[in-house]
Image (cartoon, rainbow, N blue to C red; front, side, top):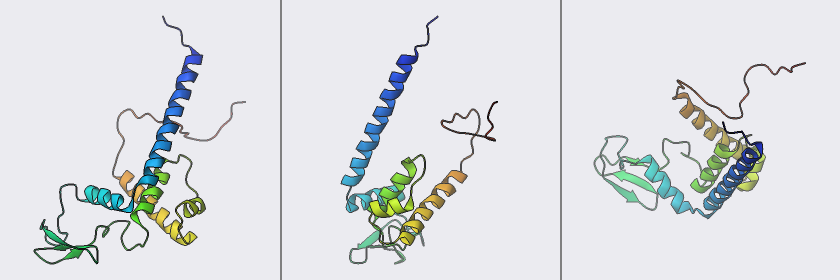
Length: 167
């Protein structure tokens, strides 16, 4: 029967932490290199993965109005923007800043300080940074509410129940 070697476990845990830190640093570097145009293209691809469909009539052909950055349905002439109906709608914040905010909020285990995000993303006011973060949190909560766990569930770094100390 093989013996459990604590030193090798510590070493492999340290290596996996190092790999995770390297990955996070790489991902952060990728995020910094991303351009506004790349964010727009990525979001359009995610939003209309099966192709554009007009929200008014369901038609799939459109004209792009470059000056106003709108999609104009060829059938009913309904105009829509890439961000309409999303948390990004009616905001002046660039998609690039939204992407960075979402990444930070999703990857940070202990939470994100709004003041820190305001500074990092160069958002003018605390109120604006707070409202953006609130929209992201609500969207994440709404998404999570659709899923129900079943069967065997494994969790890391979680505490349940009362904090009682053994004496």
